[in-house]
Image (tube, rainbow, N blue to C red):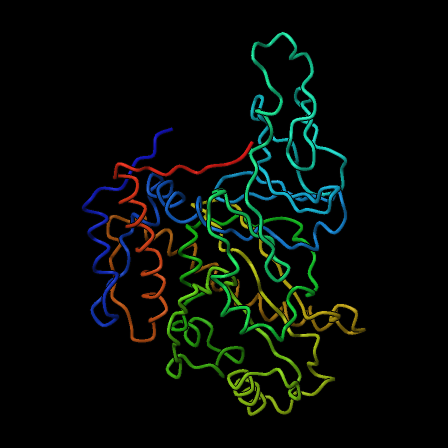
Length: 394
């Protein structure tokens, strides 16, 4: 299917969302509601970018595998007999049946439809009754393979085999989180992905927004972080937001790895709730909400995982404290999800605005700039004489 590009007028209209915060306006509603724009967006943002698909701990042993879906692409990740982590399209090279579902351990991937068999590296090892097919070469009909990189225990894949490596872009992030030992953090694979009736940017902008925190979420869970005291740090050149969408950590107060900002937050919490000792919080609530803000259009699915500090899950009161944590978090999450759903309804309206920003919404301008640069680059590339398609490996 040919990709339908946005109009030049739409691309030009991004200019007013990529200027100083005091003068800027929100992105055009079409960016959230138009199916053709979503297909362009996948090419602009995701088909050549490193995408977080899960944790290396989910494929500890040879033969372990799991499946996921990003940008509408079914993906299977497996650890080979050689110990290497492989990522491939799970679409059979014969008639497009999916060769893998869920997760588990296997010796190979056998398509249930016609029993084409694939190794853990995606190579076609068997294709029954194909001996009369002219010029059929098994080496040319494996599963499409993707580039793979492991970063602090996270598995990233890239549909573009020619993409530059990920780790050098995240050097500053690695330095910032070096004390948290994310590679050994505890966290099970999510049992079932969420399905959401909104465009992915609606959800990201909500999570990215401090303006609403003490308004929508007013009450004891958010009153200690008033929006009017919010400060916004400059956007990291290494594009840290691509690695961890949300990173929330509270170590016990005597931990030498606390940054000055974390210690200030801890002291602010204690001024409202009293001293937080080992029995109250302890190391076990060092928690990371680490998930890929995958490109979902409307009613698409998304994996969301929760990690805790190494060894935290073995603490005798871990289950109880995690339950308390999640009960409080779900109160806020439910409010956010209700807003996300209704914002998507509003964006479909013929009266949907291109709104203006508060001074407390500087993070939205940073996000706009991240998006718009990629929209413009992709538009220029796809309308130029040198088109670059995603290059997979069979």
